[in-house]
Length: 363
Image (tube, rainbow, N blue to C red; front, side, top):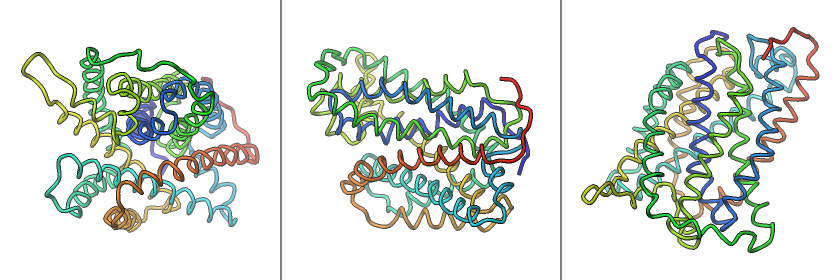
């Protein structure tokens, strides 16, 4: 379990790809519909609590022994307690739900854009099987794939952002605070719900060969902020507030405006690679962690296939897109933020309850 198979840079890449999908795809439509024109201000103001959150995550990380993660610490402290039973059930279910939401959202997007005549089960099954393979191969495979696709995904992101510059009217970002501070505060809930997800890197620290550096963790956090801010500003400045708020996938819709020269248009097919890369990393990583949690750090080969069977069945259950997005906005994201804050408090409590002390390595 404690095999050191990846470098700290892989953790940052996994954060950018997995959490980046959350904030870039799932959060943006919600924050636009709730915060209106002040959505981009909510993202900017979220950097303050987010930086504090990163420092708290790093503080917990520094308190861990070099060979362990938060699950190992819990097992060492509460292996004969009811706490160790509740903990895996809670967090394993959390990662399974996150994988389900990612797969279901991806299915809605694919079905609305380019898989009209393909049976729903085929779409879900094929993509889930690819993710299953990566999860079964382990963290090194997932991080290597993420490392290889990130430059391409980043290039496409800069391409659509810079290429659409002629279509942007930044005056549409103003006036601000039309409804007072209420919209900004509401937007903070959704933005932080996505960004605070980085706390779950503490489940992966036992696989890192070297030590994490706080400056690189903060840099990864800033990149995540820009992954929301860039397409959010682009959506408002390109489509206008009213139209952007109606779009289910504003980041994707911006591809349809992109033109290179006079004859190269409809480059939105490139976004398929972007979307599926992020969804692949997020699903395979989430269920890799869930498998590790439900397996109680032991190699049980039947856990991962069962998790994927549950995922596939759940994604195939009929659920119309409108009520699904309503569920995300009204319930999942606010509850997700509360859960992450409670998780932080729990981890801080566990750290200060641990009986042994060790020498912390320098930053």
